[in-house]
Length: 210
Image (tube, rainbow, N blue to C red):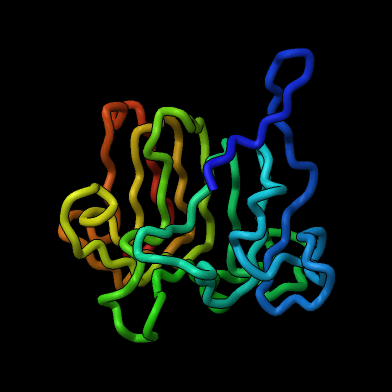
């Protein structure tokens, strides 16, 4: 899962830049290559091999879970300047046409037995926690983050940040029009921020609900 999505040319690593949105709709029935709503990827983890620097991801409404997840799984990416937009019905041609309040796009920590939070993922949305994957900017817009349960002890992700866990890499992280709900943790049920570079993090929550 930990990929920087770089290509090498003449001994120099060059970042790829996304030219069009990557579409995700769990009800899509097309070719599942992410190129349109009809052919959208049907799960979040399917974007891994196409995600590039500056990618813009459009996600249709629905409750998204990670296939084959364990308690230490999380929604995460290790590519800089990614923008994720939720709240689409799956027909829109513009970001301005979506309605994230009435068409919720949910990142769910639910795994195992539905309704049993004791076996949920420790953290739902996992920010970079290693210096090897520095990011300068990330945007999460119109996403519901729910169902994380950091109930254990030991490693940080086991007890902190049930909803959102952000870490060492400095940079700007912007949450807009998001809802963080029904998460549990020994520390920071909704959001936990840690790391040696925490003073360099610029974390913004704009029009968000907890």
